[in-house]
Image 1 (cartoon, rainbow, N blue to C red):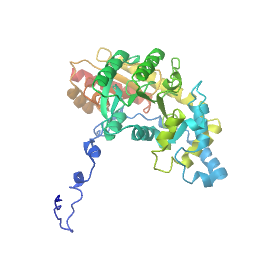
Image 2: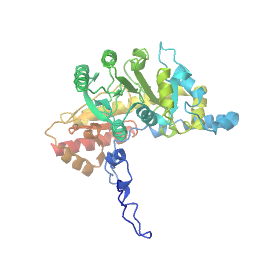
Image 3: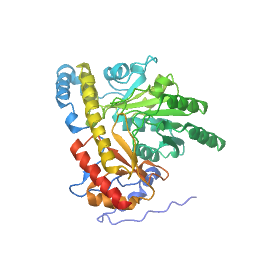
Image 4: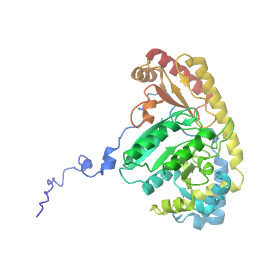
Length: 412
């Protein structure tokens, strides 16, 4: 007979639960780090950290009118539960207008709404991953996917990138090695357009090669595209989903960056059997039908394309301004990417520049960035950092870059 140890008895009047939390956490939660990417900044510090839209560009008047429309014409269904797939009217608009996939004939059955793209990613990982499954990510990678994967208990493998996208020979070699070890990854995660954190866009040729390698090794591609509509220069590149003919790719999108982050509505788009699979793992009674209907009314009123045009002009000016400031202040101290859209610039500095000294100097100068190491799951990125140009005004950004240049000089 197995003896179960009796837990120690606590005095009912003495607080105990706080110090005992690790007795209750599951192993995945216990393994998660509790810190933030950036330390709290002192007063007067200019943050180049947050990847969020320009606050002055938020379409508040149009959203207010859309809210009035929804409450006047469909208040009852808007204020009920939404169902696992989400409001059909908005799903149709996503497939037909917001994120169309040429040649696939996708419609309402190929789209499920989620509470932002973060929820979409969680839903996908919850559907397809068992603890211990392997996932391949591009590197540097969005820090959020690293946390998502660690929370799911996944084993993370990394593959490098250049200015054209994922390094295909390196990916093929990795997948071949993993196969020899008896490990076939479930997913390859990528942000192919205006990648976070690098700001680069994967070329048409690199996307086709990625599809070929993934199909040969029978690994799903998870295409995350929160920034693709924010192109302000260069030619658009077809989505990986459309280039693959809908086969072997699950695509995520979001209204957070193209309308407002507080809406918390995103989507999953894929072949019907994959959309059906992810909805089986939904236990939340659906994404808010109220917010979803507000977005649908906003789109139906013709607001979307004019607002996108406004944002593209704003972000082009801000990106050009930051690039000019970098050229003026940081030439010879660092190199950086030149994005054609999105929110981010990736800056790299010489190995002779000490990262700890740079962090201390940046704090003294009053400028804040996210260090490159935050975007690597297995180490690396110590001599790089991410800059965000979407939020601050051009004048403030220019001052921030001057402060960064002084910090780089001090840390040499």
